Image (cartoon, rainbow, N blue to C red):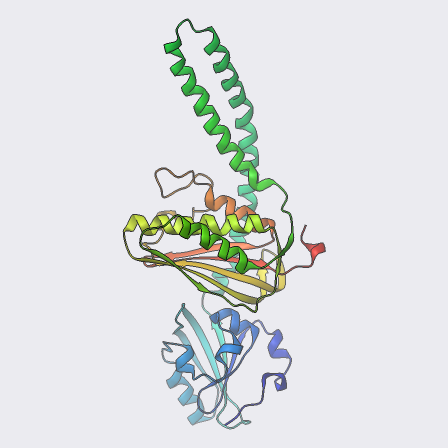
Length: 358
């Protein structure tokens, strides 16, 4: 049974925030609307014509619910289904509606159970970005002035000391002042205005991949999972390199510390009709940086973007804060989901017109 091509469906399906999927009589996928593509991180172009069981490695009670809907010829709702693709698991409610034309076709409407929690979390992250930027700006200005005075006083004292051996102590003051000054400079760096140009995100990822592999990480590989059809993005390439590098280096350090054979995945996709803060964007670039390391400790998962929070004893705790600030300057959002065996950082960067970039 051949189902008509997607353009023959009501235009309203493209605009719906509800995820919609159409299956033919053989339970092969014939259509996904943009909301369904976003929800399941699937592309209609790649899954159209595939059996449902091929796109989803776990379907829970969905198949039996579809059989009930077809047998009885009425809509059927299945609650708290767990579906899984090769990449993720999803908890959803599903309304299954049999269609008269074409015969035995099914229209599936999915409602993610955690959608409200996801929206609230994204709004909280966006507010946190604003707070972090203001905190860093105020903190650095409060520290830099007295720090300069301490260093200057130590230099003057060094010239007045009667014995050269005592200069060891003033050198400690001067070197530690310089170290703190460098830290302050790093904290202020994200506040510079980005220099926007058209950027191919895959060139950015290849640059980071080269940097990481040049450092010869022990037992760590980097796998590409690119959507090469993505258009160029209006962005600051140096800032994007720093964002990806900060996240990837954290992943490498976690894998090496755990002494396991590790893999980092760079995955790119297009996301449609995304909301970031209180703004809606028609299209966004979605980048996922995934590793199979031990995961972020549970007590730190809600704090990893805070300044000076680090899981490493010698870390400054600024890498993710700086990454978050750079992403925010691109009107984007960065989020993290972590559990033992899988940590995924997701970066959403909207496609915007040059006049909207500033």
